[in-house]
Amino acid sequence: MVAAIILTLPLPAQAGDITSAYTKIDPSDCMVFTTADAANGVPRQAVCPGYGGYPVLILTTADRESVYYGFPPHGEFISRWVSFSAPNRMGGTIEWRVLTEGDRSVPVAAIQRWFIDDPNHSEAAVEVLVVRKVGQIEEWRGCILGYVVATGNADANQKAREIADAKAHENDCRIIDVAIEEGARPLPSITLYGYD
Image (tube, rainbow, N blue to C red):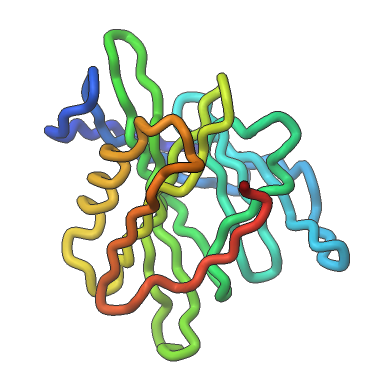
């Protein structure tokens, strides 16, 4: 079951208010539409319910995950992958930054905690908050806005919200300058393909 909790935060938006809503990923609510084919480099692909009818699309290999929030481009989802290079797993809670203008509420960004294996610190994974723009139904606009290393970084959640709110209004993903906030440990390396 997907749980949503709305919290109002005193952050101004461009023409409305931005609040946080939280949902949890429950595997029993997700639908697998492509099973993994490791020999051909095809990850397992599933769609899970997100905030207000927006989907969460999850690609999974044996030890890595990639997530897209919102509506993907027509037929292009399977070719796009962005994740950490080291083995990783996502946390089960998504924080949605929701823009409300009048009677309309739209999730414009998503923040999710990731746990990345670090061969130099085998006793503990690096925790990173990944901030992404939510893809809207009218066109593909889902992309990385920023990374906040939560390990050793005070106020990491608030920093992630500030990045989301400052950058989510940008329409062209190709020119967004990805924000990086590091903590006690550096940002782990990223693997990305299928993007221009």
